[in-house]
Amino acid sequence: MKISTVLATKGAAVFTVRADATLSRAVTLLVEHNIGALVVMNEQARLTGIISERDVVRALARGENALAQRVGDVMTAAVIVASPQDDLRSVMNTMTQKRIRHLPVLEQGQLVGIVSIGDMVKAQLDEYEGTIDTLQTQLTKG
Image (cartoon, rainbow, N blue to C red):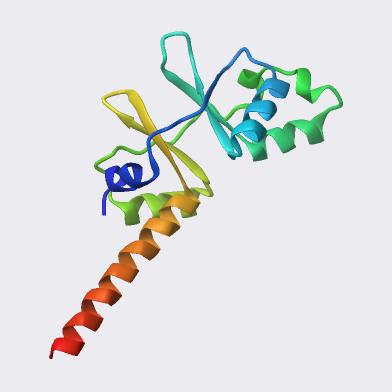
């Protein structure tokens, strides 16, 4: 299964924030959309980072005035990304090894979606259920 299949099922909506926004604004967006990460984009609509709940918690632990900080000062700038053609298992492996919960999906440099570890697990379970159904059908016909 490819990442494009996961995006086709879950949708391609991605919530973004600018690096010059405050951490308070990022937290508001996370809560408002009930999500765990925001993709950080620049003025040219290019990915410059990602900010997750973990980044927010770390910033809060470092100082009292954390919510006034800029997203760009707290975000993860070295973003690992996927492409729609990537294999589900290899992306899950990368996410597990690197301890990444959210992975932006880029196609020809353009942001086309984001997948979470939850999306990946659901897709894997759906694939397993399809295999089980096929095998059960074959057994009952045999």
